[in-house]
Length: 313
Image 1: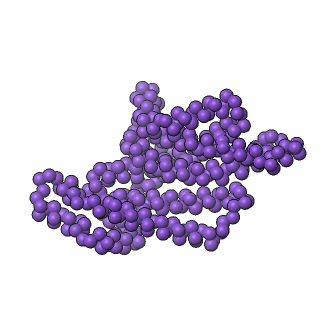
Image 2 (image 1 turned 135 degrees about the horizontal axis):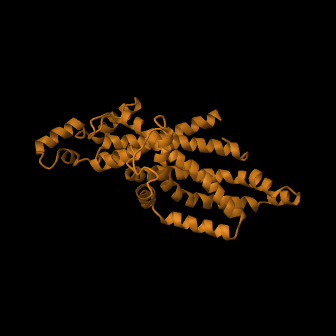
């Protein structure tokens, strides 16, 4: 186990270096107009040159990356170009907000996907067809459009839930839950569409295995076959899909947070991209890669615990 975790951590660190280097080249390679965008159209050529020197983007690209990497290894992600604040503290304050939204969305996606997928696999009639239709609709509806509809219905017309904003769990658990209902619902609906189909397929494959027919011939109860054997063998595939969904939900959170005015990483990323705030974008990329690597390691360990055939080698 320790050897496996060490190897996964090493591969994660290598991935982090590769992604940071590629992102740095792509972002910093197109910073010719950054000073002009920040200073405005009235800035002179001398003002732009002085500001580029102040930001350090007039140096060779390799020198810039080396300077950024040296600071990043010590936990210093630099200063924001537009917010007049350090990048690392800003990310630390916003990361829990995004993780709370995505975490709740992933948990609900997993629960509903298993329930709907198992139901569709076992009841191959009307229930299966209804779930198939729900999945197709989930694929077709963009989560940002669904989020706007939810705001209009539940916040504007019915006034059951707050339309925007975020309250931390420590400040008020009730208001925290109320603030998460609409954005999480917008994310979960599209996530269930693909995950439930994967669970359905995995459960059907498990029920068609020889050992299931043997258990039926021995008179083992249907519920025991489904939940103790077939579902357990199907869950690793579902967990793998859920890990992919986690990455997709992180991307979807950028737009959802913008719609619901939630101060998370997503809204910070959109603002930084619009303003050309490169240090913030680099900090967000590094943070998200670290989160994704940790989640993938956790999924691999859970797969090994659920499926004895999987060995952490």
